[in-house]
Length: 129
Image 1: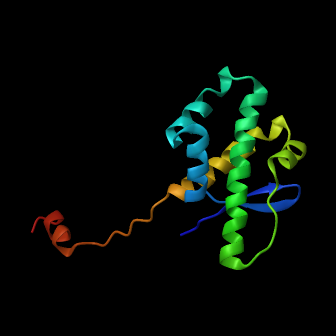
Image 2: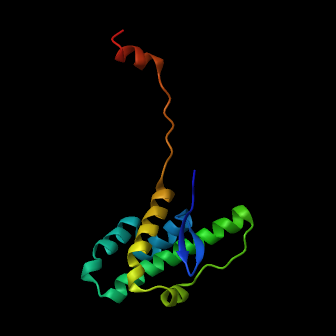
Image 3: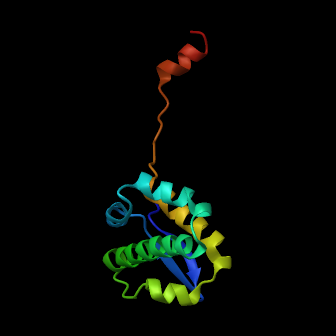
């Protein structure tokens, strides 16, 4: 199962990982994943700097978790971009691609693979036997 998604930042492919560690950090800030979703659904009601701050914070969390995953699994040693560095590297025009990348990472982190095996008895029933 694929665990990581990637976002290009400053010419570098950066891993994002929606791990249990990310869920824990999000829970501390928003109370729950549902609390995070409520915060994001209220973006239009927030001042732009607050809305972008939430996006950058979550991006920084998933970047840290992505780099940590690569360190543990592949022995890669690199530093994730910090929230302050992200503020410098990104602009308001990047918000759309960032939210797409965050959504993809969260879907991968919550995804489940389900293996379906055909049951010969069900096939017979479907054929009217």
